[in-house]
Length: 200
Image (cartoon, rainbow, N blue to C red; front, top):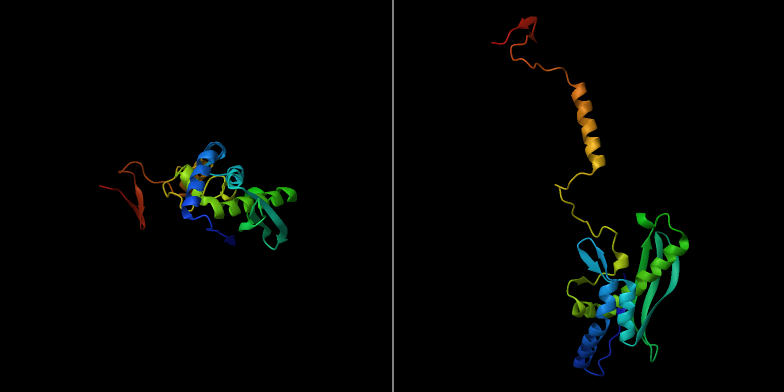
């Protein structure tokens, strides 16, 4: 995603650090309360990102929502309230290949695209504040994370689901039926070439 940040150092680095620390303290409650647990991590939702932007004297918004070949895209912006200067931009995207959104109405897809753009723009400007609030919070916007989290590497020894157990059991039963009967008694006569041979 395209991101752009504009920084001004007129007040000095120490001023910005103090401001970020103050904002972290002021926004800690709302950010923590609205953070969404997904998988084994907690992710900041758009309400948390917007509170951080407002505490910095900024407002976040989205513009230029458009339908493209493989989904919806738009641009998120963070502007200063006092002079309207854009300090950060980012792209929001919702793809046609996202299963959970495949059957949603168009307005919902457009809305989520804008929400992602706003969160992403805020993240590009204020990710450091999240770390000051809680180092265990992820700076990836919650709206970009699948419901089950990022499962790029599944465990090879994962417990099978009930459906998988039934399927495996059915295959084993079918396989056993297809096999010839095997002797249960070691002295049972077995075919050998042109006649029978009794095992010793």
